[in-house]
Length: 337
Ligand SMILES: [Zn+2]
Ligand SMILES: [Zn+2]
Image 1 (cartoon, protein in one colour):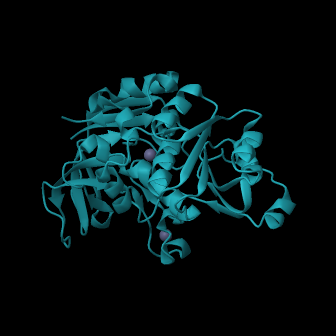
Image 2 (cartoon, helix red, strand yellow; image 1 turned 90 degrees about the horizontal axis):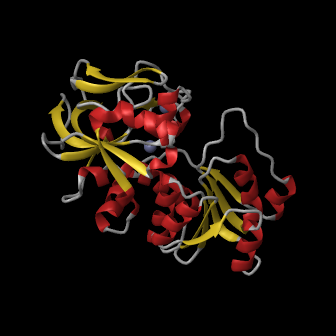
């Protein structure tokens, strides 16, 4: 089969390799669309600690079922599906308590297992989710990043009418805005970039420039209380530290952004008890794909419209362009006609 293969950091080529065959309990999917996310770019530049090479990246995958392996039921050939990329071992503590997204031996399609930048990809049947009728593959490929938003809003237990402050309006921040709004929250989004804020505004968020005055502005908007929920989606250590002053007493902080390995953050210890804040991490997603797909089908989610469609076989040039000019597109999705 044809695939976009990363042989080593900064070296991607379109070449031939063996097409996967479905083993017991597995399904082979013919790829129609696969999104490009920061994780894929990190693999490309050699900064993803979980990746190995040569690697076919791509974990935001929509396609059609090509082959069904033994002992798979309820999945028929030709149906349109998305692939959930996280494969838990089923044995470790997080897997035993239903948090396979934090598995100690996590298999990641597109990172340490073959991904979706290819004609075909193989996945366990339980990682295959049917796409609601009428949802185009490019839009359905957003199920994975949207599921990250669903997971974070579940962790935060976002309720109707609550003030939710989202730090960062990158692709995950945009997903968070729309999931929180779909839950009936009043959403305020902050970012340093005016163009990102302008886009967040089109999704119905109130927006604030993330400058030195951010805390003052948030307190002003909330009668001096702070936001009930603060979700951090920048990965910036200073923004993470700031969540403590932005959250209301008794509120919840959810950290979605990834700081670089080895970077510490520091928060006032007394605030943890004084504010009785709930401080939560949120990693990828678990059991969130069905809700993400329903949200996409409901028409409540607008941000996938920012997608720029590109040919899968132009991936080497596209990745090089994105590394040199990350602002050149909001979100790229590689498609195979
Ligand atoms: Zn992703
Ligand atoms: Zn596990």
